[in-house]
Image (cartoon, rainbow, N blue to C red; front, side, top):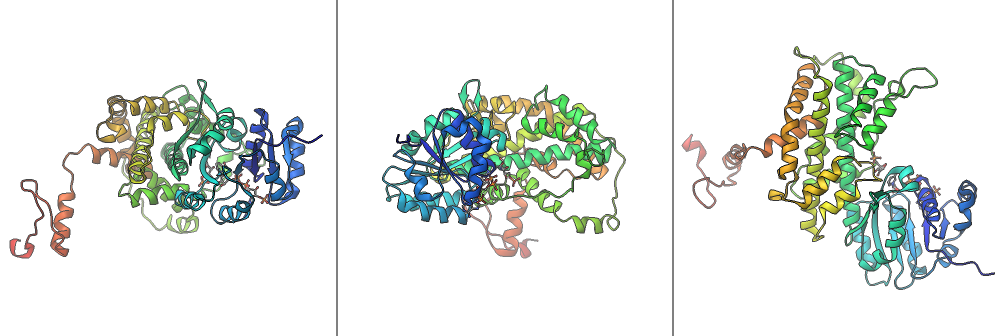
Length: 471
Ligand SMILES: NC(=O)C1=CN([C@@H]2O[C@H](COP(=O)(O)OP(=O)(O)OC[C@H]3O[C@@H](n4cnc5c(N)ncnc54)[C@H](OP(=O)(O)O)[C@@H]3O)[C@@H](O)[C@H]2O)C=CC1
Ligand SMILES: O=C(CO)[C@H](O)[C@H](O)COP(=O)(O)O
């Protein structure tokens, strides 16, 4: 008997691809599967157990494409960059009008825009789709941020909605715009992820280095925060990690882990794109920078006995202050991310629905938290100057929590505990609440040394002063 064809093909059976393929199969779809190194296909089918009945293994690209119902939907879960371009080159000649290629990896949205343009006119479609939730999310319900054409979205939608995480029954997936919109939103999601992780690590740092708390005690404190406004996946996993014991040494696991964190690019891309658009998401920048500093382990070991601390008397703020400080900083980092999304939406004409983005981040993704529901409501309401922090509800939340953030930053500065992301978020908040800033001096300096001109508060136009004569 002739075997029924597959609804979708998944290329790349690594961590994410295999989990998504199983999720699709679990939801009743027939899935063609293949992998660059084909020897990984058989163990994957064994691991799939009864779900293998819905999986159609293919050992060549031709066999894989031929196993799919037309119009074809092919999901690639492979590293971004050159591998994706190479795969497009190989698969494109095998496709027909209406077929869709989806890059579900973490891709630079500039590459996605280029690939989208490359496929336009070929009859095939290109979708850049951000997937968040790690392996477990991919297997049981990720959050997905989809870019590309309406045609592709109609093709993908039933499958994407079936496998996505659900928040109160609503699937955490949306078609956000054309070309690179989905991958841009995923990039900013990851930028916020970097900031949130860093800020949690900074609170751990002030308790460890300022108050001498052991990891399990800090973990227990964080676990308690899960009952409040900070409730989130990242607090949950950090609390669990801090309370985990290393089986080899009996020490807290985090105490035997090197203080050097890697990065694959999405945080850096967020910062680069922010700067290109004349923005500065400084809490995210601080988090990306801190990962860079973390890798300078040898230099820091050399520096410790050389650099004087020059610390001041201070006590570590009470846990309630740390909780409120983290809440304020988390709000500020998200607000910077949403500001960036709004700027990109204008720049690329995407009409991004920021409230919908917040909604699809409420479940399944790494930054899911109780706050995202508040943000979604705020983003649908009054938001002066397009800033989330100016929404009345969010401004009121900040008003409650900012004094605690100040106390924590002051303590960190006094005790010499670095808090780059927490202090950056506070600096942005203080910048934004000053109607008159200090760039008047920057204007004066630029005109003084470079005759760049300046604008005045009392007259329209561009002016130049003969500074040496006036001085
Ligand atoms: N891990 C995570 O938490 C998340 C990852 N992502 C993104 O998903 C994508 C896949 O990540 P992940 O599953 O973790 O990675 P893995 O390393 O687990 O798997 C990578 C997959 O890509 C294939 N591959 C590697 N190089 C090539 C190539 N040159 N040509 C064709 N196939 C290739 C591998 O095949 P082979 O077995 O032959 O080596 C393997 O199937 C990445 O873009 C990643 O950024 C997105 C969200 C979360
Ligand atoms: O996309 C993800 C989570 O949302 C991936 O886990 C990604 O690898 C995280 O970024 P990095 O490796 O740079 O920390």
